[in-house]
Image (cartoon, rainbow, N blue to C red; front, side, top):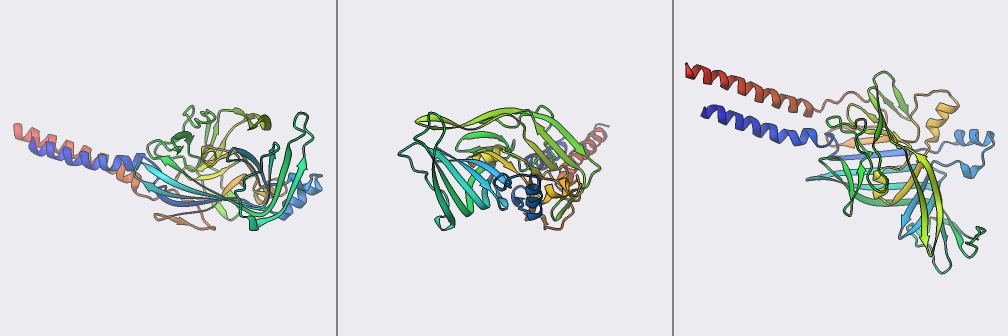
Amino acid sequence: MVNLALSISVAGVILIGILPLAMAIPYWAGNASLTYEANYYAPYVDYRLSQGDKPEWITTSILIYNYSGVLYIIKTYGSTTLEFHLKRDGRFVDVTAEIILKNVNVSAFLPPGISPPSFWNESKVISTKVMKSHYPGFEDWKWYIFHLRELTIVGKYRIRVNDSMVIKDGTVYGHTMLWDDPMNPLTNDSPFSIHPLSTRIKSVQIDNDNVFRIRNITIEPPTKLVVTTPYSYNLTQHLRKDFLIENNPYSAMIFRFDASGGILLSTFQEAPDFWALGVLSASFVDEYSLYQVEVKGDKFYLTGLVLENFTTKVESTGRDVRYPRPKTGLKWMFYASIAILAGVLVWNLKLVGVGRR
């Protein structure tokens, strides 16, 4: 019986040691960098202009960013790049994010006596314009418009390991968009966002057949499409008087993940990770991919904000990559530990039986 108890204890220690690793976050998330892009593509811009669109309508991203209480509307006419650098720290993954925008208009609508606080490198400013308001009741307000060659927004937040929740300064925003952990996957009706908007998962679709493409990446199945329940919001500038910046009566978050490794492949809009960075609203268009879909008729290109590069100390992928099923060994370590525990129990029960005889 002493041998039995000792064996159970040893197997239990093995199992307890492996369980948190297997069930917490994807194997790669403890030390990784992910880059996403919404690329500028001149042929797509020419195509849109040929359809009667105005140049100012054609953007790779539109963001509404809260900086010191001022809501800025950011429109990007060059490429949009997002970089996420992940580092495990005990019960959390620390995330440093950079949003890098090329050829940008930044605008704010402000009452008299308030100047727009800058969060950009002044050497990147090409021009500044101040325009009087023509909105009824806001005639004394002004539009401030800055045209920049480049704009970088840097921020930090944390992701809680046990439930993948995005946290910043004590506020829980919701499930990270960066992964869908294959060992603890998002499912229908599971909670997703919490603050400032509450949503749940409405739809989950696994695609085991189609090969998707990004500019220089081929994505083998399976992939997973996740859609949240609809939500509505309005973004209001609260300065002396309330001015409605954006009203969105109906929206939903849409994500496509690599179903094997859990990596986010593409998205179109805001998510808890953006809210933690002060980006209240977001929309993305990868012009290269959309050109392939709309003009070339290839519906298997992922559009929106798309994965450009992914690296980790465990596994590295470059620009020309195929996404095989994971070969991490972690999942198999978990199942192996269970098998070891079961084997030890069976063996020792047999020994106990023999001893009793």
